[in-house]
Amino acid sequence: MKTVINYFLLVIALFFVSINNANAQGKEYVPMLKLNNGLEMPQLGIGTFAISYEAAKAACLEAFKKGFRHVDCATAYRVEGAVGEAMKESGIPREEFFITSKLWVSDYANGKTLASIDTILKRFQIDYIDLLYIHQPIGDYINAWKEMEKAVASGKVRSLGISNFDASKERFHSIVDSMKIKPVALQIECHPYAQRNDIREWVKPYNIFIECWYPLGHGDKGLLSDPVIKKIADAHGKSIAQIILRWHIQEGFSVIPGATNPVHINENINIFDFKLSDAEMATMRSLNKDKRFFNVTLQQLDSWATGNF
Ligand SMILES: NC(=O)c1ccc[n+]([C@@H]2O[C@H](COP(=O)([O-])OP(=O)(O)OC[C@H]3O[C@@H](n4cnc5c(N)ncnc54)[C@H](OP(=O)(O)O)[C@@H]3O)[C@@H](O)[C@H]2O)c1
Image (cartoon, rainbow, N blue to C red):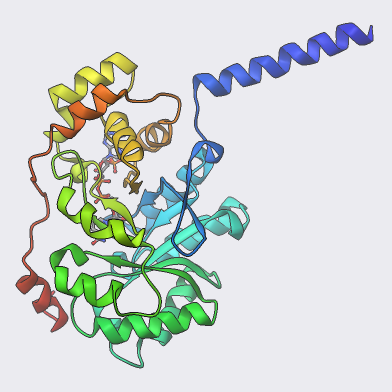
C-alpha cells in the first residue's frame, strides 16, 4: 500500500514539474543581477510610465501574481502611490520587492531632496527604496546626488542610479568619477533598433548595469512586427515582444517593459524557458540602426530645469 501511495505522489510531483517546465515563469525564473554595491536586483521588472493611476495599480497587481517583483517608477509618473497600494494588496512581503523610483528635477535643489525622498516613501507606504535614480542630468544634479548619498547613509535608499546621463559624457563622468557613492545602473532608451553600443562602453569600467527603457520601442508597431524578429519568434513559438525581451536578457541588460494588458504581462515574464542561439543573437544585433524613438537634445533637457516642461 505504502509503495502505491509513494508512486502516486511521485506521479503528481512529476506532473507539476512538467507543467512548470512547459510554462517557465514566476519570480524563481527571473535572474538576479549582482550590483556593484553587493546588492541584488531582478533582471526583469515592470515599467509604469505614461499610464493612469488605476492602470498602474492593476498592472502591478497582475504582474505580482505572475512573479514580477521589480517595479520601475518615478515621481514624474505620479503613480508611486498606486504601486504601493498594489504591493500592500498583494500580501507579498516587502523584502521580496525591488522598488525603483526617480527623483524629479524640481526636487534637486539643495535642502529639498531629503524631504522629497521622505514624500516618495510616504507615497509608496514603504520605509526604504531599493534603487533611486536621478531622473535627468540637469539643474543642480550634483547637490541632489550628495543629498541622495545621505539618504543611503540613513537607510532610506539602498542603491543609487543615473537616468538619461547618456545625454552628456561630461555629466556622466561628473557623477561616476567624483561622487562618494557610485551609481549601480544607468537607465537609457535601448532596444533592437537603438542598441547603444557606444554608451555600453562608457559603463564597462565601472561595473554599472544598463537598464533599458522603451525596451519594446514604447510599443512601436514597426519594431513589434519586424519580419526578421518574427522569423525567430516563429522558430521558438514565441511572440516578437518575447524575442526582444529575451535578447535584452541575453545581452545582460536589466529590462523594464511597461504593460497594462494581462496577456502582455504574462508573455513578458514567460521568457525563461528558451534561449536565443549565438546566430540568433547575431541576427538581433544586426538590426541596430541607432534609431531612437524619444529624441531630445541636451539643450532641450536643460530647459526643463528652469520649469519649461
Ligand atoms: N528614465 C526615463 O526617462 C524613462 C523614460 C521612459 C520610460 N522609462 C521606464 O521604462 C519603462 C518601459 O518603457 P515604456 O513602458 O514607455 O515602453 P515599452 O516597455 O517599450 O513599451 C510599452 C508598450 O508595449 C506594449 N507591450 C508590452 N508588452 C507587450 C507584448 N508582450 N506584446 C505586445 N505589446 C506589448 C504595451 O502595451 P499594453 O500597455 O497594452 O500592454 C505598451 O504600449 C517605462 O514604463 C518606465 O518605467 C524610463
